[in-house]
Length: 163
Image 1: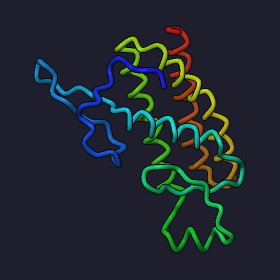
Image 2: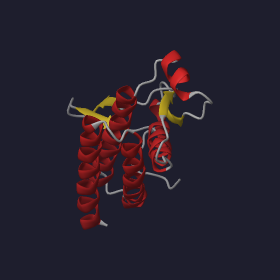
Image 3: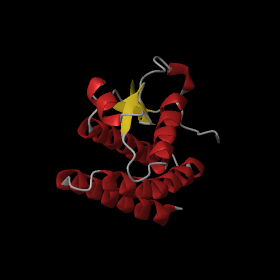
């Protein structure tokens, strides 16, 4: 991965965390600092979203998206308390974090990493379309995915003006 000039590697407190670390700036305002772990988690989860195919059901384990390949998915999902809305909320959080990272990359003029992120955002649209088709009769789910895709397309268009 290309070096990013704004990543602070000294403050990696919890490698399990998928949250953005906050740090006091010189003027006592909070600024978001992404650690390399956070950035890798974002890219890994974005890549996993791109791999979703129609019919794939997902679950979240250790802050990563996983495709449920169990033999009897419905029983496995019920037993482990996996449901589409919790999983969709995690997908939204991944995309929200990728947008925050995107803004930090623009602010810090890290165009190499911004280009990589922009390419991942382009690819996840197809995974989200497939994920939407998994729950063909759930109109609320469809609407939420449609809104996500529109937000992603808008972010891509903004980025294309800079790249």
